[in-house]
Image 1: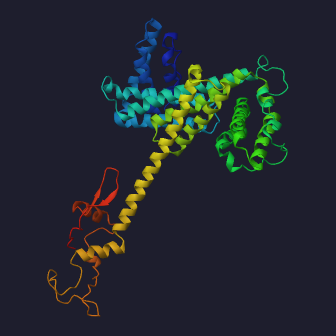
Image 2: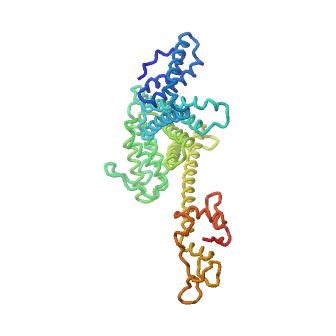
Length: 467
């Protein structure tokens, strides 16, 4: 383990993180030693801009000496190989933080891991020093900068969430419990024409007529099951169910529909204590922050990773939470909407559109793959092989002399019908998987593949293939 670095002068506080992580890595193994070396090298490069006092210059001189002393140890591999080691190290830390964050287990430790990953992504900038000012940046550099920005944002956001939770739980903030929530009381069971449901029993089955409220109810249930003691989750879940009731009432026409709405109303009234401790404005802030966090995470991942079903689900989730914010604004004419309301609606539409685009691209990719696969299967189907043989000299017709043989078999009926002759495996010049036969058909204009990878006949008779 490398000895701890001397105290860093205040003017060089910006390089503190790089030195600290370099000291933690130490020299226990070659990879750690190399990554630590580049951390110190980056710190030295950054420190040159700020070392103005004698103390700062002395510290920087000692740091440069330490970097130079490690040159021989790291020279056993090329700079390109060193870059790969440092990049892999940053990626491993990022993936660990991202996995914890997606599980909903984010805490101060998660924020610290995100911040550590950001530090190592920043170290990678020295490997692209020659690219400064050049356009465009290479793909690796752009991805590293995006991940660096994302890690910094998530670290700050997680710490802000923790601070907000502590504020909500403080004695100065909690108010005396009041008798229920006015927004829930205004939606009485009698007004909706529905009967009460006993909350002690299992919830009623979900009626098909209320499919439009299913996303809100499922998000609320997920928050209930994964709140981990978070004070925000019951509040957000409450407004998810409240929104579900508001939009579900007009559709609850059957007995099952009315029973389910009654169940939701009873649940809201029974669990109203969670939201009664804060004002409606504070509840709006909590719900808005929750929607923003999911949107920011989805938007960042959309810029970094290849879109998949998980990302589409994240965008759809953000859209759901943006939609519930409408109840905090009421029904306003377009010219009376606030900037905040317009922004929420714009983000909701963007999230819905992006989720749909991602799923459509996934379906399109599957269709193309299935189409090509089906076309290839058709090419090698027995029926098409027989049709191909009919266009080739694969029959023993005595009238055809191109085969140069008179012992080609006809059918026993003597009606002159052509009988396909099996082609010996040894004489077949194509691969068993048919890959080069597929290419051969394209080259001979038998089939064509358009820009969307769709395989189609070339629009003319099959070209004769002399096997």
